[in-house]
Image: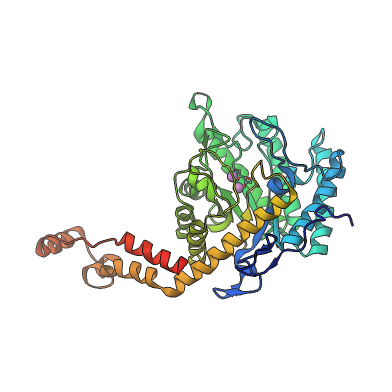
Length: 437
Ligand code: XLS
Ligand code: NI
Ligand code: NI
């Protein structure tokens, strides 16, 4: 078989002292951390769209990378792309991948032909998954690229566009099931609005929920057992995206009776665009029983858009892994690198350096999060901070055995209360000690 990355060897763990750029320094797949192998804890996935498709185009310039896979014919290219994808996953020891329907197979002139093309590539992917022992973390539909979706898909004001989107979703769910996908993602590409002057918000939200219910019902009827996810994002491409952040998405799911089938796919860069930390979004999902999967990347806090950089900030990966461990770890979800090498990192080697950097940053984050949990000082501090609710009046509050008049009587008798220090800097120095000590 033709090699698409002939200069790249299989990437292996060599340890933190290795100076081999094509080796893992922290990701040791079979090493046990927090009770499971790192492979099982991290469940790394390749994003087809960034890794196999995006070639460096930005608002001001054309492609800087070659992602033609030796062909200009769209279907031949799709086949080569699939072969290259599995060579890449194999070399990087990535167990999973994620795709949009249009990443794997090009759209044709009509839906029927488009679907026939998808079937062809799906069969190829199925074979490659078997040959290379790889799994599909989640599938999704690109309901934002084609001009027909310029006013949204599930929130489009046009019933014909809505029906087209439904047809596309049906097929995307079918191929996800056919490939044994663990999940199915709804990222609201253009589900949002630019101006309320032309928008019926309540109508659009209800219509979106109707579509999601149809997708859930259909997917379950053809045997889908995985999780559905909403991936929140506050803006871009729309000025206002409906799934603004975790809390907003949860409210939508709850209001439309979808919470039983849906969890959240939290993306780091989307969290920061919503002016939240990555941990905040993970915790919000977890405390609502909706922690599902992660789009692992990082943004640039000085830029207001989704830069989708490979994650290398170890504070962020450590605190994220701490949230993930606290949530009980992944079940159907995993860490999908929704990330791309910078436009100027335009060689094949850069793709591999990028994944190694991201995988090592999360592997290190996992090791450090485990160290923090084992140390126990942070957990102990939090437990003590709330300990006044473990006895006396606090316990009565927790058990619902008190009332405003009783609390008033208690406060009158007690008099002024001395507030406790939150000890933030002390805790931050423990974090540094554990991370660097
Ligand atoms: C875009 C999103 C997208 C989803 C999948 O900002 O992150 O890539 O992850 O549709
Ligand atoms: Ni994403
Ligand atoms: Ni994104």
